Amino acid sequence: MLKLFDTVALLVPHPELGLVRGQVGAVVEVYRGGEAYEVEFASDQGETYALASFKASDLLPLVHEGHAAA
Image 1 (cartoon, rainbow, N blue to C red):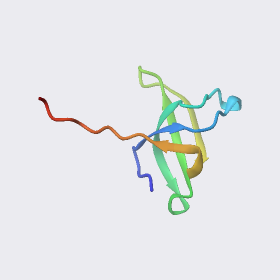
Image 2 (cartoon, rainbow, N blue to C red):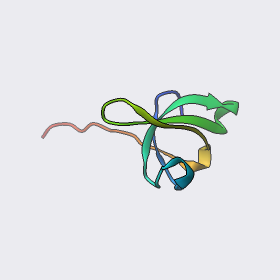
Image 3 (cartoon, rainbow, N blue to C red):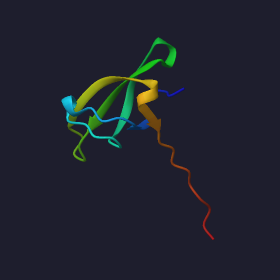
Image 4 (tube, rainbow, N blue to C red):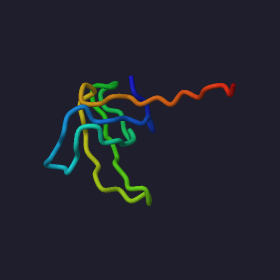
């Protein structure tokens, strides 16, 4: 289950919102125990350009794993 502020990518496009498959956003609300999520999409300057709800199946969690220096 995703949690607040997790980074996600869209698995399906939403042209009505100007969003393409692979667009990256942040979870800002969790609904119905993780059945749906409110996701904010922001520019590099921090300005929100889309805010919408998506089913869990529409989102791919993105995980950053550090690696040890050689």
